[in-house]
Image (cartoon, rainbow, N blue to C red; front, side, top):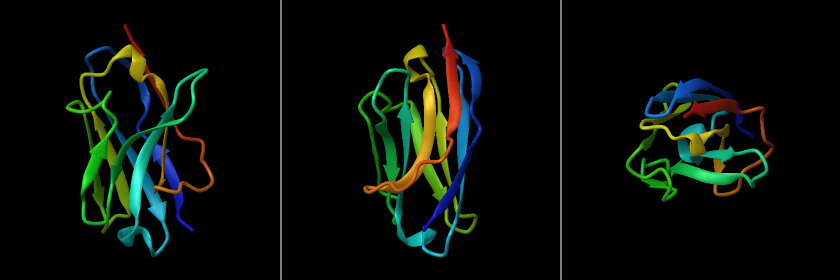
Length: 114
């Protein structure tokens, strides 16, 4: 099983940027797809971006052109670069395996003020 620790969240003004990191453990990290998910207050958790072991990516329509997912298999880390942030991006962000996420961690809070 892949254990994950998310970091990099914070408070930012609309239009600003943040870079999230997900440090993972486990020898299978380099061969599995990973993804970032988010859950806003009162809403269901949703897929934000995913990346395969060969670095193919896909994004939710709401973040296309603003967010970039990447991975460094040597460091067992997945990143989410978030630019042009909007108040509607406010949520707790989680990383997990894809497409079948396992137990959820604490995530990292992203708050975008208008």
